[in-house]
Image (cartoon, rainbow, N blue to C red; front, side):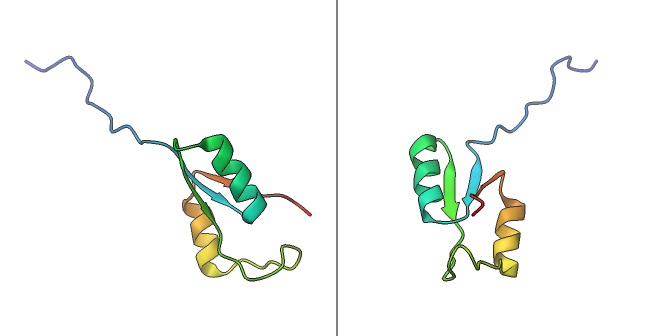
Length: 71
């Protein structure tokens, strides 16, 4: 006989959120509180001349949510 219960699913705690630059990071962190993991792409460039590195692209790809502002 087989068990009729469905297999338990692993529940992920919070979202992994990546932001484009500091003001967006602060806003996202404030709204999100401690519920999610919020990280900012480490950029030394001005936001108007930002070109993502391969590491930045990988971080954005791996994120559950990417928050940015167009200039």
